[in-house]
Length: 449
View (cartoon, rainbow, N blue to C red):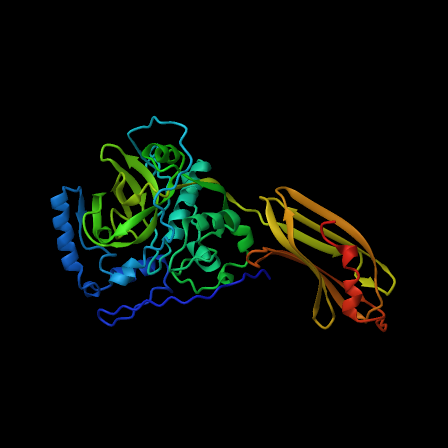
């Protein structure tokens, strides 16, 4: 059975204003959003004062947005601050420049050619997992665009990133998130539903996770200018970082600009378009459909560092898992017989480093591993097969099993495995320790030679 290596971490959120404990970690998208919306206003006892100050500041500044009580503003201060989980918010990152400098006055991937190429608004709930949601939202939309089919509406798993990567509800890095999506990828939502809990083990994913993994081929930073970001945004939505201040929690509609409140943290969102008439970017958030403009928001050009850390993705694809196989020419053998062992491996997808393990299981159920190659590389399109003729050693009667396994050297996750059983039919006294007997056969069946 395919297994996955898990991690353990503990996230406890204590709401102190009314001494009410309401964990959301075990809830899915809809239940989490419902629970958040039911949070009493008193959980944030400074909300009225904050809202009055924000509304006054909007008027004084002449800003073009509306503030009000939202599903997020009602949360306790520490709870809403925890939504900002981007830990590598950059000041300015130099990156790739666009190929053109002439742009239409507006673009909105929610309506290009009369079609919505984005995916639905999600809710990260009580977890600082914006780093996963912002990146995956861009990945999902880009797949629709690359396939020229908005009806695909790919729904990928943020929980897979939360449970399997080093990232947590306390936050993670955008660069490392994108590297993870390139190297390890993520499965579909049905395979690993979101639970807003970083203590859920990686092994909780569906058994066939390896065949349901999606990845990006590459990624890079976009040069932090309006022109260059527009150039890349013409191709697909982009994950981007921003600073969050208290007033953003109260955003209802309009073109947001910071007017009041303290710095709350770094946040990852997804750019989906621009509007030169209103001088703003159009963005997708991950705070549920009850916040903002149905979960979306518009933000003034240059505001809150919105252009400083923007990335582009290259090629979203479903990774085809590598394979390994092992077999013998017969089932029954006697000492001294010749056993033909066939070994094969394929990698139909991208280049990937794997660890190769080959061993034999004895009749008592104990496995003797005698080959362990930690950095065999299976390049794209790789196919390997070999046959080895072995002389069966003098060993006790019983059923033995060859095992062949490929694992990911970074995570320890099993990528694929195969086995082949065979029977020793005549009882004999071993010539030596059985481990030593099989150890000396390692060179005869070595993988990759």
